[in-house]
Image 1 (cartoon, one colour):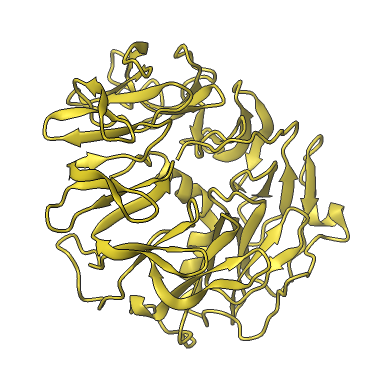
Image 2: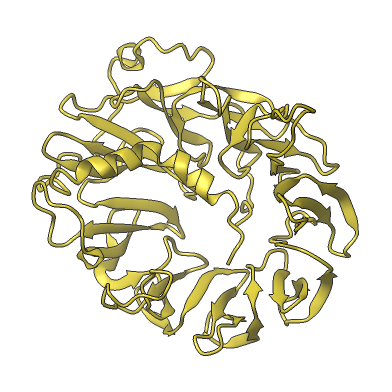
Length: 448
């Protein structure tokens, strides 16, 4: 229901190694009984040249890591953490490992969990199987997974198994949880049915589990759906209904406004529920950011995107693309895949993204990159030649310049100026922590 147009692309690339490892681990014990990767252990290679295996990274500040030779495969993961903390997944012939490192290459969360999520509000979601799977056992029962949250010291602030966690993070101090339900209790779409509520970061239930759909809190309000009417409204952090359940579709608040749909009426409401800007036709108009919002227009095909200001004035005329919100003066847009020459042959690959400025000008050549992340502090992760043989990752700045050349097999999210990179197609690739050149932290959140 909410605006996450880049999410599938982001997660697919961010977890490229994790996906393999999760499939691999089904044939081995879930988690090693011993702590082979304890907190405080440094993974920084003593011989940096040997750890790089001859990779030419002249001009880049990379700290290469050395993982034990007994590991058959490993990789790094990260999506949108607020901290420079990165999850490492690894597997040997007999064990599966999951632990987290900081930007110095030091383990801060030891192995013992099946998954460690991204840090928000100083905590991260974790999970494991209880009881642990036996060698060769397949995952067949979702109720074996127990969830909790840990802080940066590794302490469980939300005990494993106390709640079924609905969301993957803490947002504005609250976490979505849902009722524990039988795995066979599913709706027609195949999803488990369990009403949703919210706990605080001390594991106290502060909003009862009474909604059948809900979102994170943004700007003090969260969208929830009434299970009786199927309509959406907004509540505050006490659970008080601020905007009644009356909408068919809503998006999170951003810059004080939320895009809503009610019957054939589309537009933006303020935090009192007043319609302040009507939109004649739209598939979606997710977020206002930096004074502009993308309006996605259904034209019977791929659709078009225009950008309007908070008075409804069109600032960027409709383009044959699917556009995202602005951040640091640029937006990521996905171009029309039907663009072809007179012979019907694609001029550009079927899916590609570019950066545009607030005049709608493309800042990178069309067809060059698949951009796999939102702009964060003026930087964005991109894959060059996504439909060719190269398929390598790098980092662009907000001017569209490659500040990190597209020569890496994977790059995690950028957090406080750092990311984890790998090189080559090996299951045991050279892996290191890269410091983004010229990075400056900006004290504002990227679009949600």
